[in-house]
Image 1 (cartoon, rainbow, N blue to C red):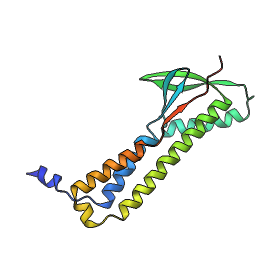
Image 2 (cartoon, rainbow, N blue to C red):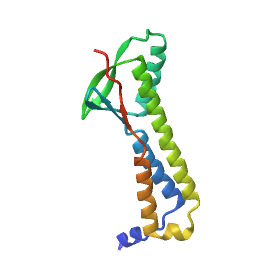
Image 3 (cartoon, rainbow, N blue to C red):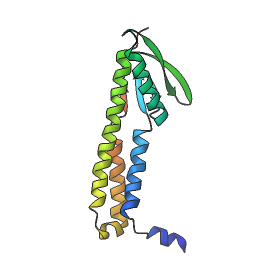
Image 4 (cartoon, rainbow, N blue to C red):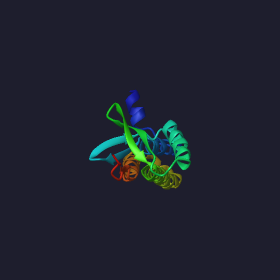
Length: 153
């Protein structure tokens, strides 16, 4: 019976490191909830959007401080253009950077714990499940919600 073999499979450190990495990526690159004007928006923190933000940040440096640009965020499956000024964009950018750093810090701590696991712990399915649950809880504790100051009309 193949399912018994899978259920009794001994986890490896590489398996757990891959698990931690995948869970960390879900948080770090799953987006930031932006609360602005009483509405919730999702800013997708994909690699493409992070690259786009770097370009916008550079563009803002040469524009007047009161310049407002449309920033693509999402409500469900619908893209919405949220107007933000220079200070607001920088606040969001800094929050996103700190959020990703926070996730990577937790990931590093968890991966260090993985390296210290014994063969007996890796062979204990309950111990491994508890480790995985704890990893998800620690990563979920990283704040991914940012309240944006009221936008100018």
